[in-house]
Length: 263
Image (cartoon, rainbow, N blue to C red; front, side):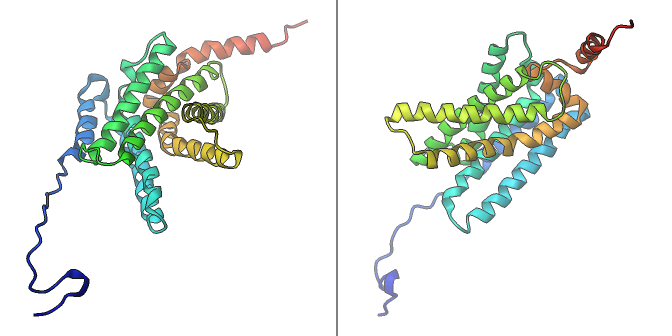
């Protein structure tokens, strides 16, 4: 007879353990849906596949971030999960942009919010094998919905402020400004709902983290929209900015009005 210490006696009765095989198929569902979007007529041009460039960059950054932060604390891992899920949602949104264009900015905002939140929640929930075992899962799903609505609102309002000819930095700066306002609005709503307002020393870091998280997944796709004519026109239509062909006569009108008539 021997003793295995904390593991129990050597000749003790066997303990039963219910082991379930991990099913990885649900994790492939968001990718299958993303690939299915290329079957749509407006996504068949080869240039549409450029969407994988910002998506790959965002997911690689998330992988590196999670490898680094998990060495300090696993609590920060959910931040990487948030960015990864939202990145997949933005990729789906960019591919579905031709279906969202319309004259009503409010209706477009609602459509964008639904697609962005749906794609992000599906990605995260599929990664969790469609199980809600902990409150953390529910919290992240709620955070994804709130983040999607705030990002959609900020994208739309920034586009509204950039309807006239502008420099390359105006839209990103407007977007960051509206993300700041959206984060303050979210904190105020949560404070009223919970009945307690966070101290200013805590509120400012929360606002900064919110803006950084949103820009972490939006920036690669904004760069794609700025560098690719294919996605640039889609993006302009999505946020309500005039297309390149509409900007030409508008710019000529501004130049004509600013010119001094001959004496």
